[in-house]
Length: 243
Length: 335
Ligand SMILES: Nc1ncnc2c1ncn2[C@@H]1O[C@H](COP(=O)(O)OP(=O)(O)OP(=O)(O)O)[C@@H](O)[C@H]1O
Ligand SMILES: [Mg+2]
Image 1: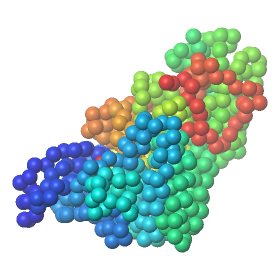
Image 2 (image 1 turned 45 degrees about the vertical axis):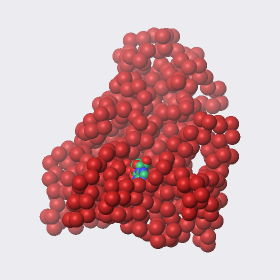
Image 3 (image 1 turned 135 degrees about the horizontal axis):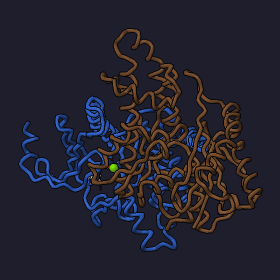
Image 4 (image 1 turned 180 degrees about the vertical axis):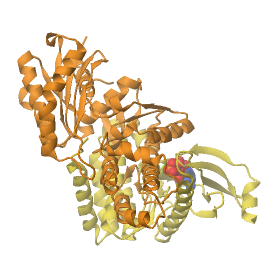
């Protein structure tokens, strides 16, 4: 395929090796690109492995497309190579993960990092709320799967939908799917809550801000999801855990 | 030097163990086994524990060859677990503590699994997969807590295995999970089952109802054998567990992984975890059924750690609680 050839000729530099994918930087048709390649896991049954790899590559592309249609920032997909389970996507420039961003703030201004993080929490809440209002479930909402990309000063995107010169970009949609049920949205929030609190201890106040702005971003129907979230939390607490 | 005696009876195992400075002196155990197709109920399990607790206590003391005067601390499982069995065993621990005039410490069962795993394997700061009849958690230590990174959002993995064993009417001796493991070794054909991972959490209830509904039909048609179903079930649920463990390891930058809890003695689970760890350049730590499955020594070990770090418990706090989360406990014995 021509597109493949174009990528082939370029250098691919391994940036990160995640649990199930390698992240390369390279180019696609001359543009800087991230190449996410899912690899096979030797521990799992070959049939299961094949099916999961294919499912997740498809899921990731579909969810990214859906998000972009509703105006949520995600990397643009350039090309999908199903044979090699590769997704060529936009390289989100000058970005760090929200996780790194929070850790940096905790170090630099530990005394009032919670108030410093408030605008970020608001943005996360509003973004996830908007996504859920369109029935898109992310499936793996963690602070590692959100990027903050520094906007060029006075660039076309500056101001408006920004956060102190940063743009919030959602990535890693391999566990994503479309679903309207409050249960699935509630679980999505529950995953975010647990990831947030276990990665960043003592940030309960921030999660409340996320939820407040989730409601605003979601609009009508948010209350059902928040009630579900409460129910899901209770399930966890009530489990007697025998054995 | 610390000598601790631990009493465990939160589920269908009754165990009493004695530990002296990390050396297991004795660790006898009895298991309440129900007929095929049946789970264990709180009342009958409590009765079982009551019937054999004194005999097991005598065995623990005789084997350890120690004078009860030399015991520093009496430990018992405070929770989580089934109410009636927990209380039947705690009452004995309270009694001997008073008789021997020793302090008493209530121990979190999950923490005890972790501390026993660390003691036996020597793992320093592992990501822990805790898998048993009632628990499925991925845990990592930070800032004085064992923090839960992932867990089941519905039923526990052991519970899922046990309930499937009931569908096939497998024996509960020595445990349903063990018999599934043996059958799975002879399975060949893979049936694709619902695979549900959400972030670092897993869900088994959809998978269980799927296989419960279809089992008889695919068996009668001859399409799959019971062995194939055991094999497919194990391959699927273990892959889910390895996946979330690996996520947590990547998340925490961890180079060690420890499997604890009753399901943790499954050789196939250990093998899969070993392959994952290898690929990451990490090290796998696991123990065998003596220490993976609920036992008294693990309660003694966690209690020893608490005792050494200066923890005490007021008499009125030595009750039992069915719900007691791993991350509720302040870990005073680690940095
Ligand atoms: N489009 C992108 N632009 C810039 N950086 C990216 C982009 N996609 C991914 N990254 C970087 O790579 C890291 C990992 O990406 P991603 O979350 O998609 O894969 P992963 O987490 O390794 O996959 P898995 O969750 O299956 O292990 C991100 O945290 C981010 O730092
Ligand atoms: Mg990721």
